[in-house]
Structures are given as structure tokens and as C-alpha cells.
Length: 217
Picture 1 (cartoon, rainbow, N blue to C red):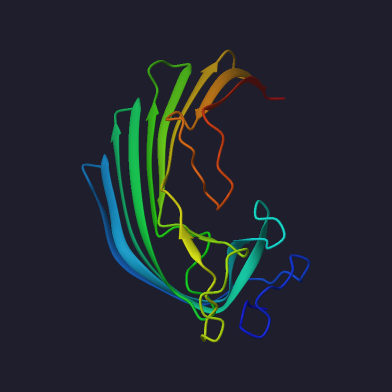
Picture 2 (tube, rainbow, N blue to C red):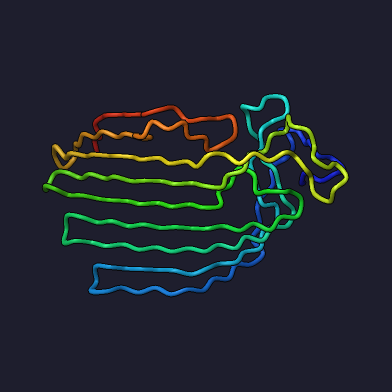
């Protein structure tokens, strides 16, 4: 099932398909320096059938359904670095760039072109664990089924694409171990109070926080 010219607006009740990986090949380098600094970089190429994307419904643009591209090639460039200082601090970062070659669509709707993650972990004292993380997603294109077709006679569907603003999510988590079985925690998300929209017409809330107690039995 795919959104081809003969039936461009299949309903959300249609059967769901599994994405099948026909092949995947990767190459790169990795290593470490003094056992504290590690790195990895390379690229990967995959061929997928029924590659699922995300689109807004024509009847309600705040709801979503899966779209399927019949034959897709995904070229991924990636890089990772990490550093560990003694036992109390760790930092790692990763970056990925995706290039999609699609059969039935003009863009890889709902999927980012760029993904960057930065993770920090502190242990200032024996009972404390503090994590500070940043997530960046860029180049996400929204599928607006309520927009007019750009070119209905084209080999691929011309739904009007809409590139979304970059998602930047700063997160903070602190955990205090009261006993071997009991710990208290507090978590904050979207600390920059951005209107992050991971999907079209579905912005995230502002600053979010949660606190609680974890008990292990």
C-alpha cells in the first residue's frame, strides 16, 4: 500500500504494513584514546520496502496516519564521540544526517534530515545522579493532506510539503538515592520553553516537569 496516483488518500483504517529491510551496508572508523575518549564515524546505506512515514489526516489535520513508500533508499552519515572523566562525569554526542530517495513521495514526511544528541551525566556525590541532555531535530517535512495537490499527474504525489522549525529540547534529570531500594527524582523537559513541533500541527507544551519517588521491591 502506498500513496500513488491511483488512490492518493487512503484512509487511516487501511491495514498496517511492516517495513522490510532488503539490505544494509555500513563502513566507518572507530577508536579510543587513553581509554577515556572514544569516537566513531561512518556511513550506512539501506534499502527498505514499505518505509513508513507520518501524515496528517485529511479530515482532521491534528491527527495522523501512516504513509508507506514502496521502495526507499536511506543514506545515513553518522558520527559519535564520548569522554569520561574518572567516575563522576561522562559526556557523549552524536550526529546523524539522512538522505532519503523515495519512490512515491516528494519528501520523507515526519522524519528528520538531521539528528543531534548531547548527553551529560554527573555524579557529584555517592547518592546523586544528574543528567543534562540536548536533542536537536532538523529538516522535518510535514504532510498536509488538506492542501491542494501540486501536480496530480506527476509520477509522485505532489502534496504541498511544509518544512517545520527545528526541534530543540533541553532536558534535565536529577536522582537522589535515599536507600538501596528508594530514590527520589525530578525531571524537566523543554527547558527553553520552545513551541517544538515534532509533527505538523502538533506543537509540544512549554516547560514540563515531573517529580516522584521510585521504590524497588
